[in-house]
Image (cartoon, rainbow over all chains, first blue to last red; front, side, top):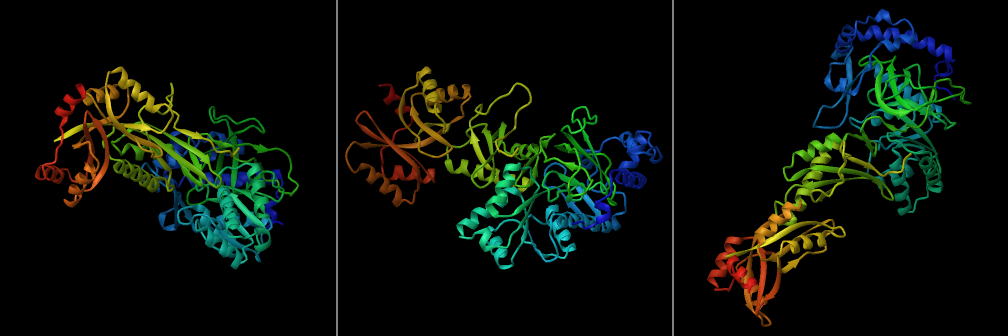
Amino acid sequence: MYLHKELETLSRSEIKQLQLERLKQTVNHCMNSPFYKKRFEEYGLKPSDIQSLEDLKKIPFTTKEDLRNNYPFGMSAISLDECIRIHSSSGTTGTPVAVLHSKRDIDQWAEAVARCLYMVGLRKSDVFQNSSGYGMFTGGLGFQYGAERLGMLTVPAAAGNTKRQIKFIKDFHTTAIHAIPSYATRLFEVMQEMGVDPRKDTDLHTLIIGAEPHSEEQRKRIEEMLGVKAYNSFGMSEMCGPGVAFECPEQNGLHIWEDYYIVEIVNPDTLEPAADGEVGELVLTTINREAMPLLRYRTRDLTRILPGDCPCGRHHLRLDRMKGRSDDMIILKGVNIFPIQIEQVLMNFKELGNNYLITLFTTDTNDEMDVEVELSQLFTDDYARLQSLTKEISHQLKDEILLTPHVKLVPKGSLPQSEGKAVRVKDLRKHY
Amino acid sequence: MTIHQLSIFIENKSGTLLRVLNILKEANIQLVASTISDTVEYGIYRIICSDPMEACKTLEKAGISANISDVFALTLDNKPGRAADAISILRQAGINISYLYSFLLGDKGILVFRTDNPDLTRETILLNRLHYIDEEQLDGLISK
């Protein structure tokens, strides 16, 4: 039931004690980070000012912009020689974010993921297929290392090539898969096309779904389609990757590991603590990271803490499903995208006007993105040239955001105008 | 050796075509030929009309993207087979037609088209003594 029994069953007061101890260590260690050293000086703070968990509020928030401004290594609290991995966000325009990991960080991350997988009943005898992107995406190596830590037989299938994935599921007797929710649906569709009944023809019993918000209805549908138990997984590369929070067999909230993180929920506008049980922005302080510890990091994810005890016996706080973002970031097919990335690509084309609209919608099988952009002038009488312009735009967008949206040229003035800030994204997906 | 054709960028949405025609109506532009095909999201509406430059300006002012392009216009006797004869000559010269449409003006057939090699087309028309009209002549014919 518990991989790390002692840590997983700590009482609330034991958790707080451990957190304070680790917080003090972390704050001291942060003085080795050029960014935090400077920050503390600017605010007239000293590590000795942090004597209780309440004192955490004395420390200013850390934002994604701080990470961008200190790209690539300005946030690091150890020498580069001691770092063994970098994970980075997508994007070639604008500034990406780089997250450094030491040997200990990679090890602790693997333990966290292993803890999560063990919690939902996976064991050494299971066969684990990871249908997440690998490479710089933390969902790939994150689950890989965690699954191996448990001794499972791993199938690092990565994303795409659904027919092949299904062949693996059958041939290798896969019992558990990690995938984004929209891909789970895709798997089912192709299984149907191939005449494969997931219940009769496969050994699947568990699905780990994450990287994009999804509703309870969607989860139940996935469970029904594939004949599995589906568990919600939450993480972010700034913290490590997957393994930050995870559902237990109760499937009622995601336990966030408080021996790794101190959790705050704040009002995204006032930045004051939200009331108990109220939805707000999740702010995390790492207390078990070495290469790049983060203090009061604004995740921009909106959620709330579910009150009360969990029958599973773990006292680590439970987070509700993510409700959305307090910034304009889009998550599509598990990939993070900022509208500004799309805007910067469109600006490169002199044939295009200033207005564009991104529409996110769900077809039968998948989430899709349409990008409508105004043609500033009819520069050619030739369909073929207009088509190749559309293709080129689509191609450059794919290079930037790693997904291929459907690009549509529209006449000037045809996109909805607004009085104030331009509305750039219309999200028609039914996820909440 | 060419005539002006007005090309208008039109979204495949209800009402867009009518809007264009009304603007041209207000500006007193007379259409003699036009064509648009069933492409999916957007189309290019091509028009032969009186005073295409004026029409283009009027449309731009109304926020509609349009441009003027040069197209060839052969005049043919209004008898069966004349189009086949003309196109045969172009083909023999190795010219490819990008698009084509035709209409009657008075007692003559006008074949409007665009090719992949305007210089060779000019040459071929001259060498084979094909009859054509230019912008000035077309203007005259329309106003009659």
